[in-house]
Length: 134
Image 1 (cartoon, one colour):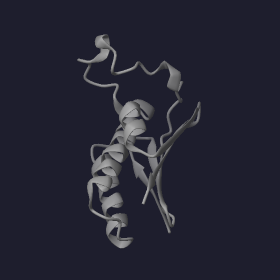
Image 2 (tube, helix red, strand yellow):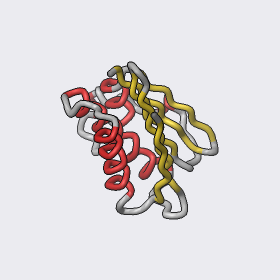
Image 3 (cartoon, rainbow, N blue to C red):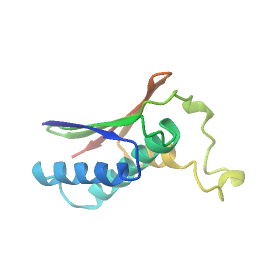
Image 4 (cartoon, rainbow, N blue to C red):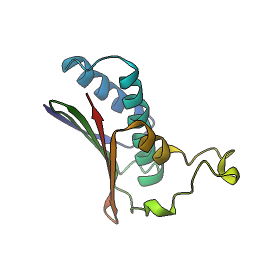
């Protein structure tokens, strides 16, 4: 079971993305449990990163989301239309000099909350693939 959506980057992008995820959850009976809270937080972080860091809030750019429910896995793909980034350049948010920073925890949180995460980034955008065991 797969669903996809393309959302314009604007002030309502995150709300539309969360509605899309909740509709999918309801339609495919994903449990509303602690596991789903982890999915929601990781998803929100990935979409926020796509809006703010990838697309840089550019209203001419989109966020592409694909949700797939397999027998034992729930997969989420979030793609932006940015210029890409090097994952190794993201500062470690657990280091003392980064603890009080307002941002910089998204990738770290996704890695902690998802059962698997893969980032594919180039000058045509970044795709974050997250996997969650069901």
